[in-house]
Length: 266
Image (cartoon, rainbow, N blue to C red; front, side):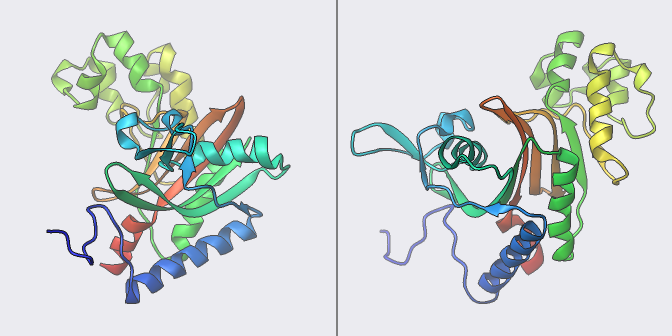
């Protein structure tokens, strides 16, 4: 029996102290974005083109009045860029949003996010960290490159699954060195095909204290270069990266509000 007060698996309920903290986090994020001259955008809950961002099984599907397939918003990034370029035709390049996305079968994921058309990933990472600093939180930053595991797979003959599962007994010497790659590693010890991507990772890291994971295999459909994750134990607090939408290279990030709330609220 389903009672009238039951909440579906994946649904969210905020009340009392937790609701107040959530509102305060979102207010702090809004202040940071406004100080850095971001414009706010709230996109429709429904979208026609979410398959460009997510796999079909992740989407909650339905139909419009003409029986055309659409879905609940599962990701905000691509919709934001397209709406700015094609519908708003705005000259503003920096945009932020505070809104949920939805994943099958009934999961709500609240996000604080930003997209910067033709922007700088290193600078938008600083914005991400600025928000977390304002709520007195600091977490490990993990930097990877979407292309490296694929190239390593071709060079080594190992499958991406071998790399994803870290079957180290199959790794050759330079692959094992990638597992401990850091700012002091000698890039010349690695194949030419991946050196430029390792350099890109270092450039984004700058003087930040980061963890490099060149062999991390990500299930991301639109990031196409360097990307980062900010983590707390097994939770992703935030992630960001660079991508191309309609021939415009952009950068963006999302803070996963519920994972941040879990840490703050205990």
